[in-house]
Image 1 (tube, chains in turn yellow, cyan):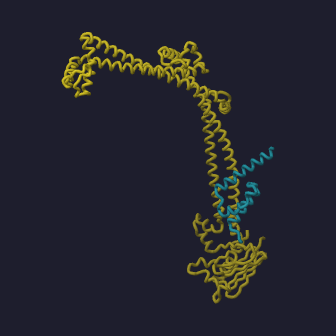
Image 2 (cartoon, chains in turn purple, cyan):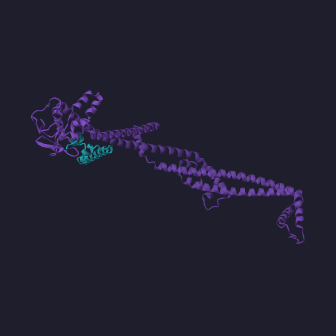
Image 3 (cartoon, rainbow over the protein chains, first blue to last red):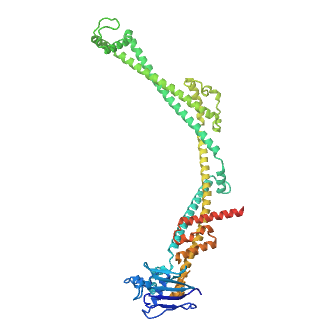
Length: 475
Length: 65
């Protein structure tokens, strides 16, 4: 049998106008206090609560009273109020201080758990759901419950992270299996196949793809330049035709007119231009004879009008010649560009390792000028040589592009496989870690929950077994 | 000073952790107080569990070497 309340002394406490001392039987498991209404049963229980819990007791339930002023007995003051208990061989006392009950005594003052009739009635009368609330003040451990809730939240989070890791791992595995099946299911299983693939070195493949792409880019550029040269040459040829036509027309007109007329046009045009600039000239700049500038200008204009057709033809010829010269320059520049483009392409192809190029079997000695950077690069002969070489190299464009595409595809596949294999490894490790974490947290929750429930059950058992007769609890 | 219900339960929890060797001794210090005051957060639980896993791994490695 555990410790029991041994003695209670009341002095100036509520109805105890004279000092009262109650001794309890230590060897009895239950003490029953009974009596008529108003004989002091609640006062005894309140006195225990006053010392042990530093509370006013049942007075707090009466809204019309001020507990502190109703606690001292009639005819006495708060100074004379004192309650003492003896429990487990030790004693504690309480008086009424300014702020409320003040207990004194050794450490380990017992706590009294008091279940009042009003509370019992509340439990009995309450609907089932509200019964817990009625008992809550006895069994609630809100702070531990709060910590337990945090633990449950952590478990939820870890479960979600574990689920995410499993989903990611499964997804990577499914993708790998699809890739494996697309490859014809080689080897024992997709994991073995993927692991081996992931170990393959992709550096050589990457170098091949880069080199092929470089050659293809240079080839494409040279082909584009060649296209531009062809356009420019067509333009030149067109200009050449127009120039020839203008020349023929001019020559034909010159033969039908007097030769003098034809050659004097320039002289007359220059004289007209001179007179337009020197409107007040009075002297011929050639023979130094006196002239009337205005009259002379009119005469020259009239003569030039007569020779208008010749003038227009000459203008047209000059314009055609100008266009031709321009087109010729453009073609010349395009030829230089083509030679440069082929010069850039040639060494890439020559030093390349691709079977697709070797199969063309280029006789490099047949293109000495293009390969020699010191040679002048805009000549027709050089251009022709560059065009011949380009035409030959052009044959490797399609097979080389196909190879580059295939290599790139293989490279992408290897990269993807490696990524998925890595993901599986990472998520497997993460899954294990989360499982361990969850396991540890679940064990902790088991303890927390068990101890909390055990405590609650203990309190409820203590109430059901001993009722109010054993209100002290130092556990 | 009388212990509150939260303190009583928190101490029992810590004692059980100790008994079951769920948490290393040095990490049990102050745990009861935090539990009883409702200050043991989700992050605290996770960290404690992670440290215990690390601890267990180190123990396994130590045994194997």
